[in-house]
Image (cartoon, rainbow over all chains, first blue to last red; front, side, top):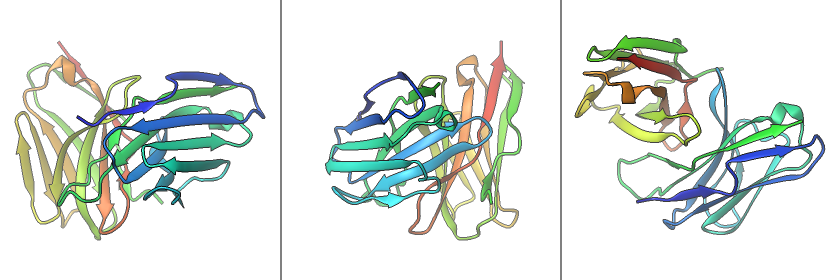
Length: 115
Length: 111
């Protein structure tokens, strides 16, 4: 069973704070993703990483950065948190090697509130 | 530009009846489609998928239908159970690209 864990389930931060969200997976998957989920907007991709030290912007990267120093860990950084970054943040992983399988495995999510 | 659309934000169904969740897409280059289920305070979990070369895939109570000419995907749940109450996301993958998710439909199955 794939296990994807996220460092916090709930987080409250103040405007302007630097926020770190961590994601750890135990299945040696190359690909890792950060999404945010907002009502009526579904899941939107913020950043993804194909492998260690490799990252690419998703659809909404503004205000975020990421770090992947080890294969199992993918961090999302909010450089200066703002109230419009209040959201549910979801980490996901997948391995590109499985033929015909594109499913991603998600962590439990972090509900971030910026006040 | 929303390439994957779930136009119904919510759906209410009686226990034992059929639930039909719909998804429309605009990109004819999508080659793979998936459905995810999400309970509150949990991450989405994979439910069922279908390749663009097929028009139907069945797994127990869940069946996904793909109509390529209409660019329409649907998920049928028969019979619906209260434990099926969740938000359902459809997702599509363009060949070589990343998954694109719809907005989600909240299904409520009433006893």
